[in-house]
Length: 157
Image (cartoon, rainbow, N blue to C red; front, side, top):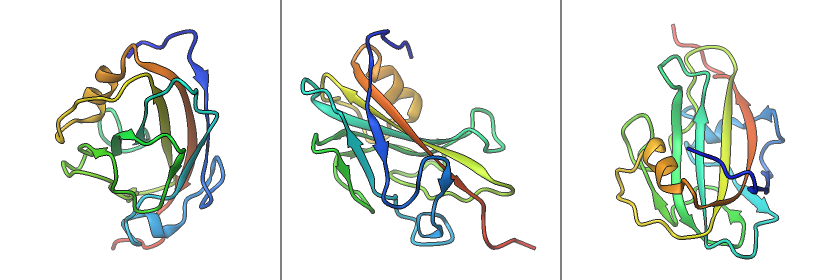
């Protein structure tokens, strides 16, 4: 995916965790397995939709593990907990929608990357991270990221 040098920065925050802070168990495979709330600030007025890719680059598989792919999110900047609006694509587990953190060992970094786009995207429900990135190419007005950390609390024997 190419990035336009004129891409602006949007600010991504969450009421559940700070940037580089610990994501609560509730949002993992050990909890309710729902997405944490995300807030997006400084969205360019010309933006038509938002998209999110949540990815774990530390996962022990080639290219990491994508937990969430969602696009055509409304422009109010509020993505609530357990969000089911907009279009949700396929995560690396091969299921649609959000898949909570479940690292096999150690602390993993979870990147919530949000994109403000100059269009709405017409994509299938089986869209993956790679297909979304390709579709967004040339349409990104602004982007931002918040990173959360998670380590499983229960150890498998």
